[in-house]
Length: 194
Ligand code: ZN
Image (cartoon, rainbow, N blue to C red; front, top):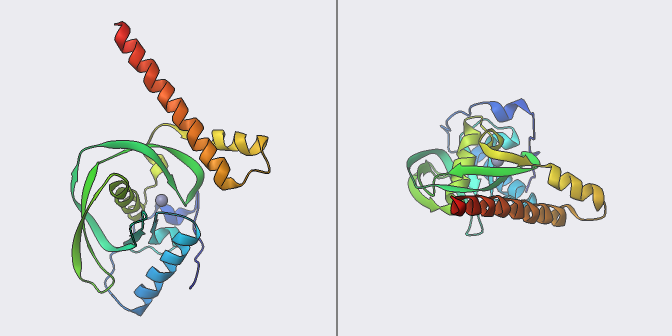
């Protein structure tokens, strides 16, 4: 078990395009195992190889339904739309609303090089899009619609220095969703008045 260092914020490796995997050997398997260890240690639901400094077309996802490893993944179908909060282990303490397809079909290879196809909805679809973006050197903050919520969290941390980061993040998310609801309600009322 080896935890690798997660590259964050302005690290230039996060902005580079990753290369296809050609060898399905032991070093690939070791990387995949380390990536899983690193993702679980950080409480993430997904992790792409560039986030641990390896520019290869690999990501892993576990949204609580088991680990899936994707090598050379490609989105072959996308359908519908969803807008929801997104965050990233490489952009700590920032989050915002990103529009993604509701359903995504991805074709990829497993750790032995065998091809498979997988269809994901909601969070799983969002995760496949988010992790796939990392392989193109894109991060979610490029695609946020509206504000990037960082100040809310900083404010909570400033006012409650003893609060664990998890609890502070939870509270920040709740406040943010309240703000979003208020905006939605206001829009609804304005619409009714017309
Ligand atoms: Zn990410």
